[in-house]
Structures are given as structure tokens and as C-alpha cells.
Length: 357
Image (cartoon, rainbow, N blue to C red; front, side):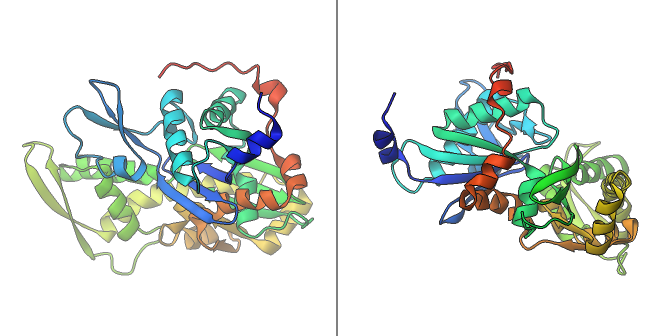
């Protein structure tokens, strides 16, 4: 075993890691956000070699070489492929370090509130294999709340809804702890899938993920738009002939597709609000709801939720970064970090993981 003094020479950074289904975001104490890349890697199917990570791999998606496949090793916010998650995280951690060090002293990672011990252990092992000395796990909803400005000293309850790519996480926070939470594996990726299905079934056009993401980001709305005839040309592959093709769609055509997914998210929120204790419900009535996560950027989602639950709804500043910034704050409050972390080693060490790729 190395002595503490020897170990300190290797230390460069304390890292906050928000490893999501769509993106991995890493922030470092004193440097803020240092990495924000898609949670994907590209693999050569013949050799098994990983040829690209993150943004470089993402840019290949849909246009890969014939022997290359782009894979997402996380699904619904949890590890679906342990070995590839481990490789991807090690690459991202190495890229995020400021010096030539081989180890980070500590990292705090986000996790879903309802994650199993086995899933949590898989994330911890991946972090340990990335040469991080000590790993803390913290519930995503609590981190998002702190990152959105909720104070750990505030005794009154706040409601934070984090809409990610693969999950929607609802956390009711008071006095620096979660008093009620719910995670559902539905997120903004569902909109992409619904758009692709609509175009294939009703317009005879097969499109890739890049196309559906562009439609969602620049054309989709969660509320009925005034200009329902506003048109957008979508290019792809004709389902019947297989030839390159294009169709023109309108805002009015895709609105019901998007609204169907947003309604499911809103219903989860509404159902969760009925489960609160009276005093907590009173606080939320006064304060409303804070939206975080990439899904909060969907045009009009705050307005839709406001009408659906009849409460005030605001989008936090830079909602995609709320969770990682909440994690980063923990390094300034070590006592709070010890209190809120979910690093239950006695349980996790007994959680068996399948290391099959």
C-alpha cells in the first residue's frame, strides 16, 4: 500500500461526474465544467477494439464504417454494458485531468434514487477502475436540487424534476435530504423514438438519430403552436424503395407526437404530487417546481407542466448542468457529502456483478 504522502503526489483533481444515458458531464473543483460529451463509444466488431469515445464516436453515428458500431453502454441511467462503461469512464476521467497524474483523490457521482445495489456497485467499480481513489455516490435528484440553488439548510420543501434522456427523476427536498422521490425510465429520448416511428409509419421515411434530434431541438414544441403550417424538410431513406428521399412535415403534424410523450412525463409528476404529506404539499404549492436536465430545454415544456399540475414551473439556469454543479458543491461541504452520499460499502461489496460485455 502506498503511504498517504506518496498518494498525494498523484492527486490532481476532485471530480463531479454526471454519467447520463445521453451525455457524460464532468466538473472539477476550481475549474467548473471540463467535459461534456455523448455517452457513446465506437467499436470495431472484427477486432473488438474501441476506436473512438464521446463526441468523436457520436459524430460517426449513422455513418459508421462497415466494421464499426457506435454503442451506448448506459441505458435508462444505469450500466447496461459494464466493460464498455468502464473503458468509456476511464477515457473521460483521463481527458478531464489537469496534469499527468494517474489518480484523482475523490469523485462524487450521480445515481438514480431507485437504482439497485448491483447497478450502483457497477458504477462504483467503473469509477475505481478509472483510478479514482475514493468514490461517493449521490442521488441525482438531490444533486440537481443543490445545483438549481436549493439550500441544504432550507427546512421548507422544494420540488425538482430532472428530465434526462432516459429517465425522469422527481425529488422533493427539505433540509438537505430527500423526503420523497420517484424515478421513471421515460425521458426525452422517447420523443426521438416517437418521431422516427411516426415518419416511418405515416410518411414512409426512415431517418436516423441525428435527424430526430434536430427535429426535437429546433422544431418540436410541447404546446400547440400558432403557426401549425410552418414546414420543415426531413431527409432520409424511402421505406419502400430504399432510395434517398425527403418529405415535408409541419409543426402541426409533429405536435401530437411530442405532446404524447410530454403528457406521460406530466402524469408521472401529477401522480407523485398526490403522494406528498400535507406540510410538504403546502410548501410545493407556495414554491412551485424547478425543472432541470436536458429535457427541460424542450420548447414549452415548462408551460405545459404549469397548465397540467396548476403550479408555478420554472427552468433552472443551464438545466443540463444542474446535477453536476450540485455534485461539485459537495466538495465545499464535506460533512454534508458524508451525510447525503449513498456509498453503503457493507451492502455494495456483497452485490455481485456480471462482468460479461
